[in-house]
Image (cartoon, rainbow, N blue to C red; front, side, top):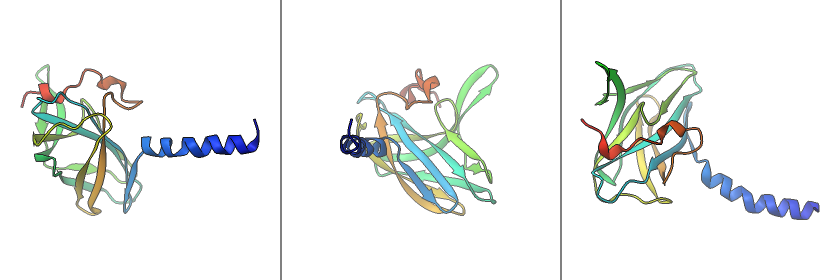
Length: 164
């Protein structure tokens, strides 16, 4: 293969890779690949996930989340209590200095209530993360049929079936 064909192939492939991996920066915080699973049109809720890396020497806290596509957005976590997995709201999430926090199925996540309509695979919606130190950061959440690579344990997660 000639160099010209190789470069052309890479040029065509690069935009696809950039669409797949979307990342956001806010001060010392780095937010990786916000995503949500496509839900049935009648599902009353949805969930959003991402990873927050804190590259700084000071901790920060995620205080709240909001989005125009839902009547209410809350920070939640799964906890194991009395032999049962439960989901509960949390007031904030600490992001340790030099550490990371994963928002993933069966862990921390953003619950979206009173949705105007369920997003479909391939669509995106805005989500604003409000940090104590880094301030407000707007990200685009990619809606997918399946969990992204590396989130395989998410296969059975269905935000519409959780008990609150």
